[in-house]
Amino acid sequence: MKLEINPYTVIGIVGIVYILMNNGVGLPGMTGQPAQVVYVYEKDSNPVPRPVAGALMAINADEESGIEATEFEDDTVDGGGDVPEQYEAALRAARKSGLPALVVLDADDRIIRVVSSPTTEEQVMESID
Amino acid sequence: MAKRKKKKKLKRDSTNLVIPDRSLIDVEYDSNTGYPSHLAARDTPENLEMMGARDFPDSLWIDPKDWKDAARDNDKYKLWAEDIRNRFTMQSPTHECTSHALAQCFEGAWNQQRKGKGDPVCVSQISIYAEANPGQWGGAGCQQVLGIALRRGFLPEPIWGQEDKFWHTLHGTAGKGNDNNSSGRWTAVRDFPEGWQETAMLLRPLEVINPRSIEQMVCLLLHGRLIGVGRSGHSIPYNKVAWEGGGSDPMKGLHAPYPDSYNVIRYDSTRMMRSAVGGSYCIWSTTTPDDWDDPGELL
Image (tube, helix red, strand yellow):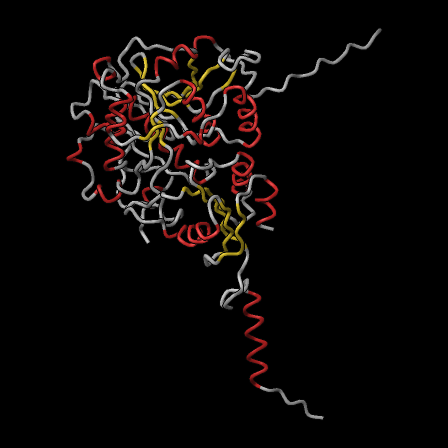
């Protein structure tokens, strides 16, 4: 029996394989691996809890993590007085959720998750698992 | 023969500091390092407030009875500004001390925002001092150099590959410098590289806190920031607190270590810290680039 292959099926399979090989990049609604984790806060309300700060330091110290962990205070700006581009998405998500919040993003600045008011190392580490 | 009981080794942390040499405590210089009394007299909390510094926020207050626990946490998580310090600077024999202390405070705040000391930025002390004192010798005020940095920022030093990350750089000091602090000739502002202002705007302190007591200074240090101070003719950046004994009294045995701009860690006792409150400042935040990998906005 001759096997007939529908060209649309082939295109579909190739497309899905490509998307999976690229950590989901290109598929609306899907996010890739964590690339950035940001604790967004306003110090007049809450300074960064020590265990959270320690977890962020530990993520950066692990060169193999491939994740950039930082803190960002609500009103911090770049040299031109604007919200730094690298924090625009995180800040939007954190403000929507309410400060303080830990925001995990992929390499394309897509939100993976938002953790409201984390206080422990475990909450930070679980957020990037 | 009875076996000798092994003595349990005391774990060293910030609450049982051992200062290796008593001559490192409360150091006062015979020579002028750059903070003479007539300039020190202008450094007051009122003047700092007029420059835009804000009062100490209540949210950052830590009850003194909790200081040692907070210090142990800082040890555990490596949260002290000292833990993320990248370098010493070396000002000798210049009068640049206020700008060297300021640069440490700026770099510490930058690293604290980044949560680490990888891929840091290091800023030129002379890029500030040259404006504060165009005559080169005689020093400057703590708040005078801070005001210049707030208004127009630092230039980065041409070390650690920064010459490839920024359009403009300037050597760190007209003093000796060291492997991590570039040295060069005295450079007046008119001789800065053309268009330098664009780069300097990227490296500015943003929020400055005005501590009005030794207790507020300790709280800020426990939050991992540095305190720039001037006292006894010399300006330095406190970057930690530690106790040499002291038991339950949080003020007893308290010391503030600092990376002096002479390649050495020194310590101030509470006596010296109290004398330093008036002209002190804390840089809480700095301008933040659109991309940490492109701090000079070259791309």
